[in-house]
View 1 (cartoon, rainbow, N blue to C red):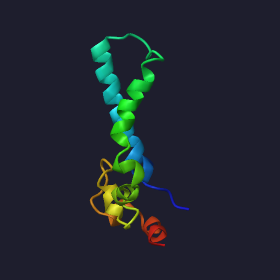
View 2 (cartoon, helix red, strand yellow):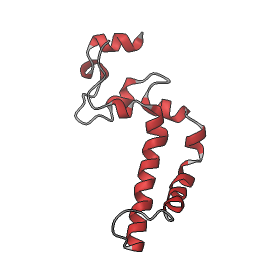
View 3 (cartoon, helix red, strand yellow):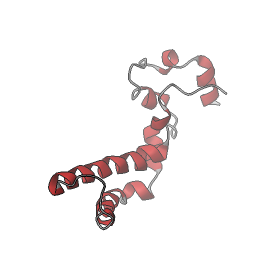
Length: 110
């Protein structure tokens, strides 16, 4: 089996692209806002955690949780488009023919 491009697996996982990454971004935003507002030092009190998690979760549970198709499109898996991933990798070549060796492209074309 041929390897995937270095440092690209997180870009090629539909659930990460469509669900987990946006959830992590929203969670960080909710925590930052809470820390500024409460000026709390240390960990989140147990009684605050469900409220903060709900703020993050309510942002995510829209279309992305029930519709995984955009994640597959964004990763270039369906429909197959290796250029979508290559464009997101810093320092990658502009075309898949130069950035990926021919054996990997042959494997992906299957």
